[in-house]
Structure formats: structure tokens, C-alpha cells
Image (tube, rainbow, N blue to C red; front, side):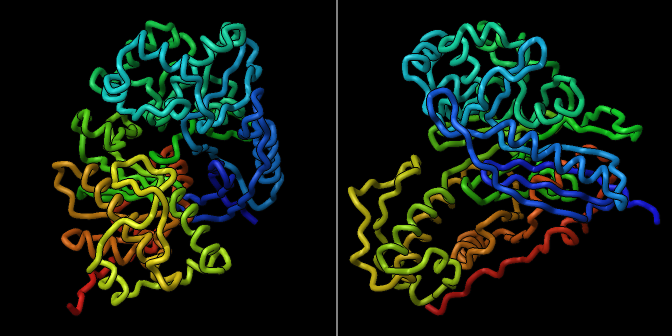
Length: 461
């Protein structure tokens, strides 16, 4: 029996760790999910357990190598961003993988802006809304001034996708999509590291930049395997669309964050853009992608838990709620803000507390929540579109299963061709494609993504 030739992709999210096998036509052959318990850093802050992650990767890799049915031709990695692994001269890991939600010491942030320019200036030049540890370059600055004795031992700092690649190759590299995701490291107008990186001599810790499509040929147990250099997950999720669609589009990637990605807008960011939480991601060729994001999924979860509590429903009840046109029209007649959002910093009227007394049922309050989230969603999509000629909007991620959200999207963007795309493969597929030289055509998304065109709502007013 001939073995099936496969590419392995390790797709590492903050919550779910996924392991995929793809055949030569990018068809999924195997998929495994796991959640790994967190550990804590030296301050007791919860963070990824790097050794548990390495062991899980090693076990899965070895199991496939031992499997008589498969011949592994290539491996690649897509992971969340804003996370550095610091290595010493011998390649040993020096610190925990600091969590990008860990608060950063105010005095270190003050020192950074005092030395290198105002928050707004840095944010605009690096296309990174200022957010402490989420700007991973600041983690290096923080290390230098908070833990100088450890900082002195760093030989290389690798973003997480490149560290996973390094585990297989022993070669340290940097790569565009990881450098370009809200790291504070890259000056987009200069197309080079920002001046502060050179002034602090941090450039010496960042390995040479290689293209995202680069791969390193190694041999394992006398088998030749091509190892990719890894890719940042948001850029990876965008890749199948870029490779298969010729017409300009916007991709709305929904989940914990709702991110509007526009690969056809290369304007420099303005101060106003930064204030509206716009940023740039990087394509695999180093070109910019204009994006705007807000913490929609996070907020949605917080508020839905409160609704379930208030109306005495099991968590999960919300998944069954279907769009109700009469309810929607009634709420829109007396449009007001009823929810106090906790994790969203976009400008909106602040109220002191959420008011649920006005809503008789869970369904009614839930529709109101979706209306208020949609107002912010419209705002962020409009920002990302800017002045580019976009006609198509693709929506992927968790909210494609949310009937109310999808109906509201089709209503508010009825002058666009709005499509839901359902692919649990997301960023894994992009990671598999980027190290293959295979050309794909327009029908690719149709085959892999169960695309559906959304019909605009026709209201019986």
C-alpha cells in the first residue's frame, strides 16, 4: 500500500492547540484538538506552558512519523502573535513565554515614550495601537530595563511561530508576518525596523529576516522533510483568500477579536486611525494590510454570561436564538444604549450600568446586545475599507454560526457582496499553502470553505 504524502501543520491558538495533516490538494486528512493547562510566570501571572506545548508537538510529530499510512513531506506552524521566546548562546530558553495580556509596569512605559517619542507617534509609525505587552517589541524593552541580568544573556528572541520552527531545524530566523503584527518593531513607511529598535540595540537580538514562504530541508530518520519558518495566524487566515481571489475584498475574521482585514488598502495610518484601534498586519511579501479590530468575542461572552444569569438560562441557550425581524424593528424604533461594555475601548456613550429591566425576555435583550455590538462592527469595517474599491466582504470564524449577527451584517452591508465562509481550517490552511508552490484558482475557496452568499433583509415596514 502506498503511503499518503502529507504536510503537518501545528496551529497554536491561545486556547486550542490544533494539529492538522493535509494532502497535496490541501484536503484535511487528520485533525486533533487539545487544550493544555497554563503555567505561571515569576510574578504568578498565567501563561503558556512552553514545555507542555513542545511535548505535545513532539508526541504528535513522532506518532505520524511512525504511522504506516503517511509520508511526511513538510511541516509548518501558525500561532498567535505578540509572544517572544528568548534563547541564550546555547539555545536554552531563558524566560517564561510572557502572556500578552500581562500588565506592563507604568514606569517602564513612561521611560519608553520619554526616550523614543509620544504614544501616538510610535503607534502611527509602527501601525500598532499602544497596548503594553501586546506590542511584543515592548517586551524586549521591558526585559532590558526590568530584568537586565537576564536580558544580557539573550542571544536571539524568536516570535512563537519561528521558535516552533527552530525546534525542528536549530536555525533562528525572523519573518515578516510576525514582525508586522502590532509589535511596535516595524516602521511601515521606512520598511525597516523602527529607529528605537536600533537605538536600544535590540536589532542585534532579532535573527535575519527570511520570506514567509522560506523553508529549510532537513532529514529525520533518513526521511527528507521540508520545515517551514512559521506564520502569524491572522496573516495565515488571510492567505487562502489572497491566493485565490483576484477582486479586492475585505475579510472579517471573527472570534475573541473581530478583525477587519483589508489587503487592498496601503495608506499610511493617520492619528484618527490609531485612535479608532486601526493597525497594520503584514502580507507574506512584506506589504501592509490595513486592519481594524475590537474585542467583540470577548465582550460578547461576558455579556451573554450575564444575560444567562439574569434570565435563568443555561450558558449555550444563546446559540439557538434566531433573528427576529419584528423584535429588531421594535428595538430600532427606540434606539438607545442599554449595555455597559467592559472590555471594549472604542468610543461610544458610556453608561454607569447595564439596564436589562427594559427587556421582557432573553431573546429581546440578546437582540439589543447584537445591535450595540453591530454599531461598533460597522464602524471598524468602514475604517478598514477606507477609500479602497471593495465590493466583496468575506466573514469567517465563530460568528458565522450566529444567526442574528449574520443577518445584521447582510442588512447593513447590502451594497456589498457579503459571504459567509466556513472553514475550521482557518490559519492552518494558510500555513500549509505558504510552503507549497502549488498554484490555486478561483474555485479553491468554494471547495474548501462552504461559501454562502448572504441575502440582504427585505423589511416589511
